[in-house]
Image 1 (cartoon, one colour):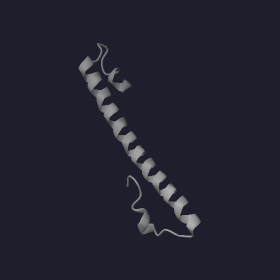
Image 2: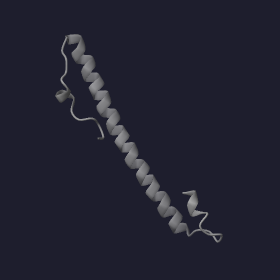
Image 3: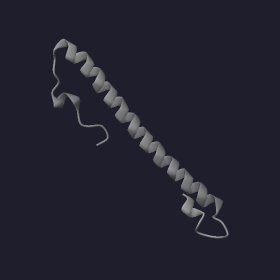
Length: 70
């Protein structure tokens, strides 16, 4: 982001700065959503394992689904 300010000694148009910041916020939101999804899937798997193992049951890899976010 800071490279925008180094482009010109006269400054950078406000709309360009705001557009770049909006784009970065969008990227951050997308990353955060992906991490939240992976966290939920990991937590669900953990809870499932905690329920299955005491009952003496094992889980096959096919029962866990694909890795989150991959």
